Amino acid sequence: MIIDRIENLSRYALLLPQLNTIISLIEGGTLHTLPLGSYTTDDPSLRYVIMRYETVLEEPELYEIHRRDADVQILLSGRERMDVADREGFVTTVEYDQSKDALFGTGRKTVSYHADTSHFVLFFAGEPHAPNLIDSEERAVKKVVFKIIV
Image (cartoon, rainbow, N blue to C red; front, side):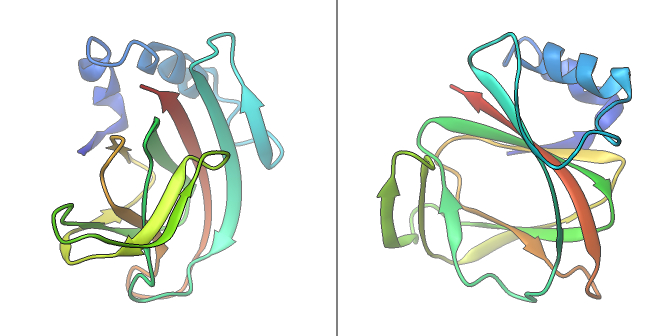
């Protein structure tokens, strides 16, 4: 997992070259105005989803793990908390769904990240994470999640 300010995203482009496309999309300024939905890019290993929802849970019911994709999550508006669980204590309760590249389960929280619009988080494949949590009070959130096949 990497958490940093959005302006520092380029520091990690040697690790994941797809971040250069993400930076271009952010600098293009259209993410805030695009309709909700799924989008592809010229790079077949990078796609993204723009979503809107209300945070309603104070604690995660389940953590998710991806096998193929890394997630770069950036809030376009609002605030939310994202929890990360210990991989060794993770217990699968919903088996892997290849079409969603996700399995779900319970785990022991190790870190809470308080997301805002000035930061990004990058969850690597195999890292149990639970986004969409209340950060002090329920809030409307608009977010872009970039999916990078690694």
